[in-house]
Image 1 (cartoon, helix red, strand yellow):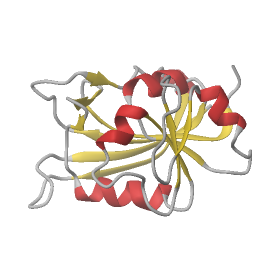
Image 2: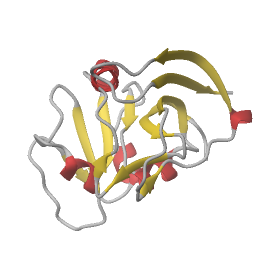
Image 3: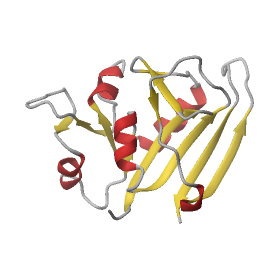
Image 4: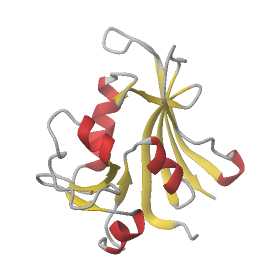
Amino acid sequence: MNTLDNLSIIVAVAKNNAIGQNNQLLYRLPNDLKRFKALTTGHTVIMGRKTFESLPKGALPNRRNIVLSRQEGLRYENAECYRSLDEALMQCDYTEDLYVIGGGELYRQTVGLAKRIHLTLVDDVPAEADAFFPELNPDEWTVTLREEHPADEKHAQSFTFIDLVRK
């Protein structure tokens, strides 16, 4: 399958690629959330049903929200629901910036399609996790940004913002 130039993945991962436990994020990093908002506002976010249902206030404001689920007739306020990634992508314009925001199954489906990955690497290995980001082949990606942040009063773990572009 071809890479989509307008498709990006945005994800926060632990050192073991863990991304969640019990349909919740593993970490609360205010600067990561600010980066997420800055990158995705005004654009289209694509997520699985469980990710959407984990959002505390429903659809993310100032973004086109697309939810994927195999469930027939699913409806959410301020979100479009589609039964497959292909169906959703057919409803998107090639000029739209698309951001895949989770969860694990959708990341596995899209990692081969994405042109860019906005990764937050958290300097931690959680005791428990049940959702993981797929392993990346470093030969397929070029690092365009690497920004390290130490732990502080607002961030319990140190973390690194890493932007990757497909070679």
